Amino acid sequence: MGSTGSIGKNTLEVVAGLPGRLHLAGICAHKNVEAVVQQARQYNPDIVVVTDPVAAEKISTQDLPRGCQLWKGQDGALRLARSKEVDLVVSAVVGAAGLEGTWAALESGKTIALANKETLVVAGQLVMELAQKNNTAILPVDSEHSAIFQALQGSAKDAVEKVILTGSGGPFRGLKAAQLQQVTPEQALRHPTWKMGPKITIDSATLMNKALELIEARWLFALKAEQIGVILHPESVVHSFVEFRDGSVLAQASPPDMRLPIQYALTYPERLPGPTRRMNWGELRSWNFELPDEETFISLELGREVARRGGTCGAVLNAANETAVASFLAGEMAFLDIALACKKVLEHHDFSPSPALAELQRSDQWARQEVERWKTQKNRMAVSR
Image (cartoon, rainbow, N blue to C red; front, side):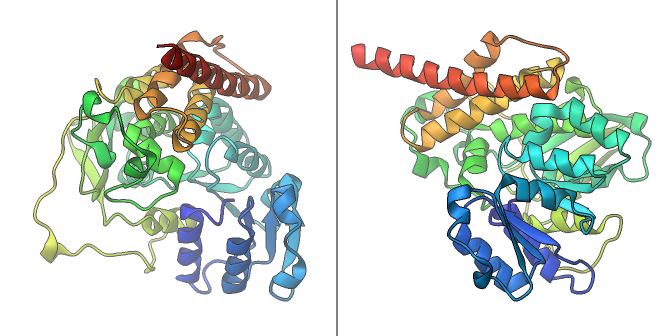
């Protein structure tokens, strides 16, 4: 799910790097027809899905390898997720849009390799309950959560004191709010370590990505918000720490290469030779760590609040952030206003502690509308001045 994005491309490289070990049942893209056709010709899946109705009309089976089926629309994506030929679904769609496909796969008893953190941010309690009900595994693909998952192997759940998520700090690490007033989308998209899509790259720049990961960790590992910390590590080699009750700390380290956590999820519990980069010990000099500046980057406290309160908070924060990031990328909102808009919307939403899926969807839509309203009001005030 999301084969033409960064995680999707890396996943296909991993599958190709393990010949005979994995079979590609299908790939699903939204509207990048040219890319998905190229992927089909290179990796030869059984099924290709294009979910966007307009884009789907630009592709036919003649564009695909012989024997490759073409399914169209969101119904095609859900049909693929539920297919009896599928054992594992890589959930790599960006944003809340990834929840529906993940939910369908879980309902059908599929193992989930989860790169779509928003699934747990929006509906963590419901998703984990569904996975437990269907005895289905959710294996983390985010490098930080994969690191925690690896460090926990062989340890009892109650042995964990806390987990520490690492982050590069993005392109603006060390800068203060006054220095970020005129930040452009082009500047924010220059990530110092990772090559990712625009939305997650902006989230890294605001540290909202760490806030969302904090919420994801809360549900994925059944932790309290107080048990989850964040530390900046610009080299992006140590991907997270787990501190145990006896004071021992385990870390997982590897070059910043998403193919490693993807492969671990696809082949778990095996460790196989694959296409991932290896550590060059001769080039290592030092690893640096520092606490994040939470006065400048207020997203982290928003993440903690959502992890503490649960309920509708995750759906509201995620929807507000998606809308605000899109506005920033379109030149309609200032960089620092992304987190500020999220804060205002979160503070004023109608909180529900135990929402059903339909209520979460309504909260999502309300938050998106509220960000647009807040942006319009702020822009009007700026013009009137």
